[in-house]
Length: 281
Image 1: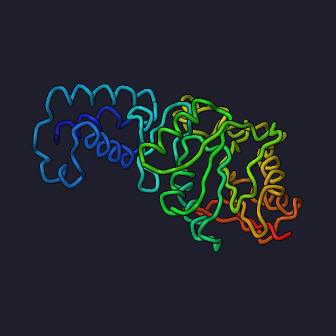
Image 2: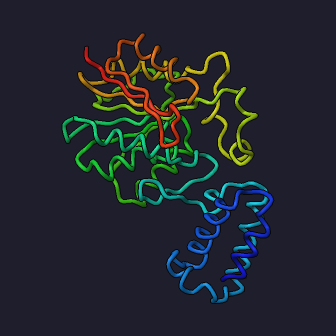
Image 3: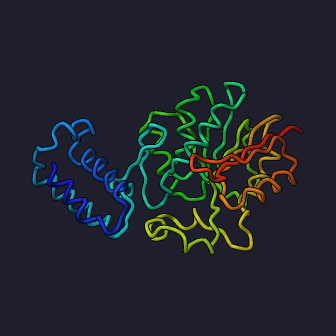
């Protein structure tokens, strides 16, 4: 195994940071060989079988083309849950886990109704259901392929989450009653910000789930806030993941819609990445 780890490091050394390569090695060996990190340490001098090494070589080759490891393996971990991913959905990020933690701590009745707009892989809705077992949780998305992925993820984790297809920018006669929490991680990256993004995101993750026009970067937030104003229960909460450069603009938008107790929260890296507010009237 030691030789295999050295092979991975050598092949990827000029393309990725050392710490990222170490993470790749651990995940690849666990996925391909079924070896936990502890076993990787204890049996460091064990030899990898040829069929497994061939699989590892294929994975490394795809990593050299900057394909995300999560897409290569077809899955990732989010909030301690296995989440299947593919190029029709975004790869869940750690800051989204922080948003989920924030929502779980809301002081709302246990039998709350929650809607996740632009659910993608379903990771937010499914993570919430894993902790809020008495909540009625649903997720909507415009993408049929994303919804197929989300439904599959709910089944894999044996969690009852309802998913349906709808376009928040063209929502007509959407029934469903009032929600206690509405959450969304919508597209928010401006076209002009592309130059600062990693190649693996630009070339592999779905552009329609990432980018918005430079002249209308809050288009999804405005539509969701308008919907939430009508569809939230009294004292219900609205949560967003946001563009780190648009915190003040987000606060102004939510104020314009009459929301109260508006908070722009920083992620673990000190960036403005989350917004939360409340409907008081």
